[in-house]
Image (cartoon, rainbow, N blue to C red):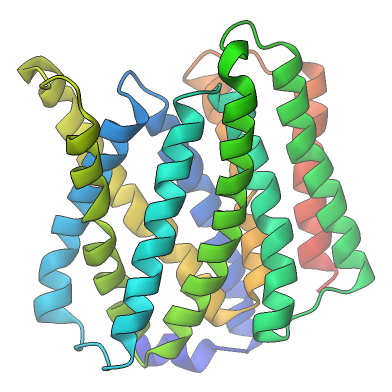
Length: 300
């Protein structure tokens, strides 16, 4: 499978596969976001997820994939620092602001900066048609944030701080997307990077959550938290793993933009399962996201 993936790099087949992986990552990321929207605070939920995928990755890292090259260890350290900062900022934003406001801001800033950073790091460039698609997609994403902000009924006293943390998180999304693309391209076996990334990345948040916890978790809460963490860990494997592979197979910027269609899937999940009202304005903004993503891919 590794040889098949390596042969697909920088080919039309690889581009098609990257498109599929990016869309799959978007769908799974929407489920991932809905899972974190539950009754647990963002610190505990993220800790349970990270601990789960760290333990899942352990046997793969130690016994299945090839050992990382010596020069990969500083890269893993950099990824650990960036992702830990991202998750801390995200939890700070989620604990202070409404998910429907914070999430679109984070996902709107991320792809725009990723496209810009990828230009300098990987010499990637978008043509005028693709930039037009990016503008339409961002208009839809940030329009959703403004729309949800307008009708926000509670939590306005901490909203300004939440928005600051959301913007910082968006910058870190662009940073980790570009950095992970560099990391997965630096090793001969992409699955070596994935296995060790998830193993190392699963360390920080459980420790931070334990440090921040003011009260012991009740057994009844633990019974609900553990299955959610395991499910979230599995989703993270396929979601983040897919987008990382997509950035190795094709352009980093295109993968980043396509991943943000997760907001479309999140709206559908919210409507079908969380009984959230969508309405004609939100449908229009969601359609703009879809149209923008199609233009970016079509204009390539």
